Length: 115
Length: 113
Image 1 (tube, rainbow over the protein chains, first blue to last red):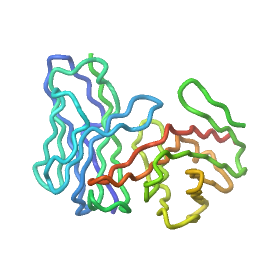
Image 2 (image 1 turned 180 degrees about the vertical axis):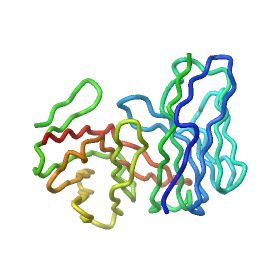
Image 3 (image 1 turned 45 degrees about the vertical axis):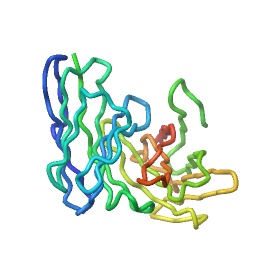
Image 4 (image 1 turned 30 degrees about the vertical axis):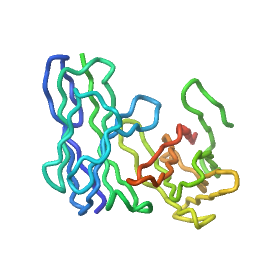
């Protein structure tokens, strides 16, 4: 099983709303990632969690707040977003963040639209 | 044929042809490479990977070639099918403390029946 699940599939929110994106994997992976992807562009790394600790924050604005409640779950809390934050948000996982040859698996993504 | 659009290079082939998608990577210290396929509205799907100590790796209908001398990666798809139509990304693993993937710009593959 190489499945990473994400909910919701689609999300529309206003600039004053607070919402959360959820990601789950049951592969026993200890590294989890959030990416942002704009249309016709490659995924851009936002955050890396390793063993439930935030390891990398790629200078992401504070209106995006990640959380890793346990080794299987990863959340992305959204607050006061801007229309330019509309994108496909992808979650990914990997067995270990320090191993260079582990495959990274992606979820299906959440299509976010900010009005 | 291959064309470079405003944002995404596109490769158009006929069903049954062999397709070759190319990727140039930038970091000579990268030690692991992955090809992903991304269909419209979906997340990237793992296709095949290769370690830097290899030159070639074959999967089912796909082959990845790695030329470290010129920092070039290619994905060959044999007997291309309409279901292969998607955007293909190469990704290199850069080892710097935590291993992270850096993605290429992507190539759109269009397969005509």
